[in-house]
Image 1 (cartoon, rainbow, N blue to C red):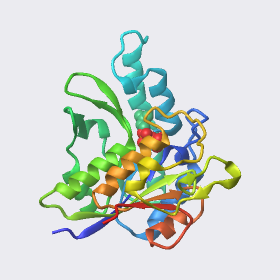
Image 2 (cartoon, rainbow, N blue to C red):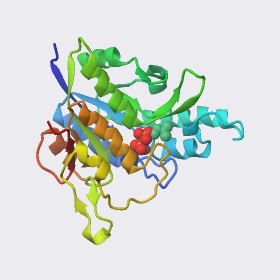
Image 3 (cartoon, helix red, strand yellow):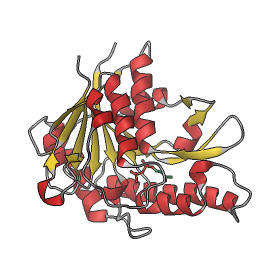
Image 4 (tube, rainbow, N blue to C red):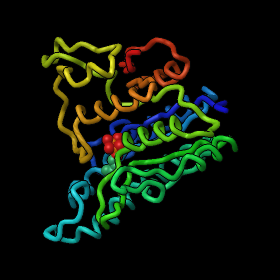
Length: 272
Ligand code: IPE
């Protein structure tokens, strides 16, 4: 019996940190977003990205491409990537705690494994936490695989995997109402010209491969480009789950998204 409709909210790295400034944490922005989550009273699962914590370290040691003996101190860098993600996660956990909201982190590298496909062992724990009135929190991390290698697991892949296991579960008490990606823009823009860029308000997942996107600035992102992120989002939509890209810097946009009120944003869905 499915009885809890949850929102999965991705706190994108470009919202929680300044991706151009290593180890910068946007405390005030995170505080406001968590305040909006609290006021909404909605069931939520929080996933956050690496931003200016995980990405620069992962990039320096090329963690995404796995073991490379030519990279000096790469294994130290592998451990460091994980450590800085824990540090970022703790900063967010502190904001939840400050506002007296129970939130508990599940360490992604302990509950995901590549074998060779992505395996996830956390659904029961997520359900237990939600049943206890706790917000489960996961984050982009390093991930191990069955060949004794490693790579980076993005928050976006985590979201797809959670959605997929909820859909496939024979017995679960949760369903996904919507996935909200908080980013530093109002959504997806088409056209290459800044002055002419147009916000795409509704997008069918089938249209993603042919989108002519507006230029995006080059920030450090080891996991993929916006095109890659959109492909991941397309996979989530194919499960029959609606995805909304929402500007995390604009006040009350998250509140409105949680109430399904109209805001400038991009909603992506699978055409029936
Ligand atoms: C990346 O996660 C995690 C690491 C670099 C360890 P994401 O790819 O989801 O992060 P953002 O949201 O783009 O920063």
